[in-house]
Amino acid sequence: KVAPDKYWAYVDYVFKNQEEIGKRKIDDVVKDWMEDHDVDWAAIAKIYNSKTERQALLDQVSRAFAVGIAATPTFVVNGQIMGFGPDGTFTLDAIKSALGAPATPAKKPAK
Image (cartoon, rainbow, N blue to C red; front, side, top):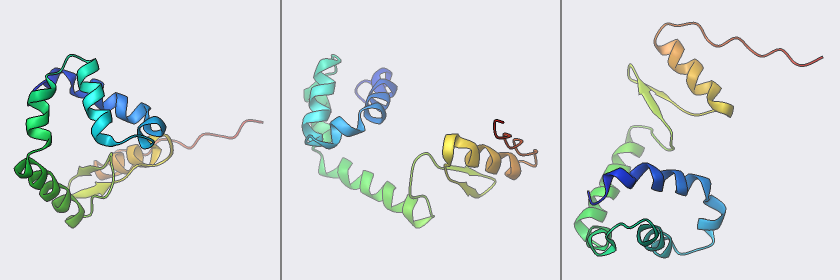
C-alpha cells in the first residue's frame, strides 16, 4: 500500500536472509529494511501496528490453512493444491500433470 515497487525487493531480502532475520526481532528487521530502502516508516508503522490490518492478515492465513494451504510457494491448478519439492520438480510435474502435459524426464545418474 505504501511502496508497492519495493515489495519484491523486500520479499527477496526475507528469503535470502532467513538465518540473520531469525536472530532478530521481526519488528526491528522490518523497520530497518524500510528505512534503509527509503520507504516511509511512519506510513508503514500505521499499517503494521493496525489491529484491523493484523486481523485481516490472520483471517487470510486462517482461510489458507482451512483449504489445505500450509506453506509457500503453493499453487492451485484446476482445484488441485500443488506443493513444493526439491528444485521445484514436484511442483512443476504436478502442475504439468494437472494440465495434462507430460512430466519432466528423470535425470540419469552420472557414470
